[in-house]
Length: 77
Image (cartoon, rainbow, N blue to C red):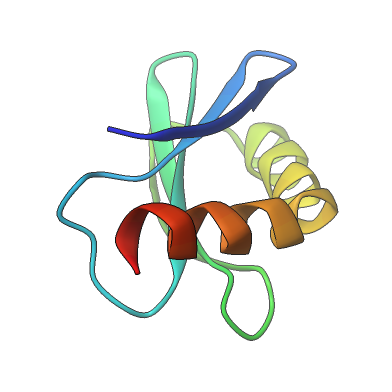
């Protein structure tokens, strides 16, 4: 499970058997969300995260979108 980055208690990561479209998982507290990032950062699904947590996670994903894309291609081809 490659970790892309961690910030403010949010952990952004991939699973080792990922598939397209390019996306990233994020955990915070007891919740998890998935953001598609290929064209733009867009929430795909979430479970157990509050609205303000999702908003912060999306902001972080947008700020680090290039890093996420770089790591995706590095780890998953």
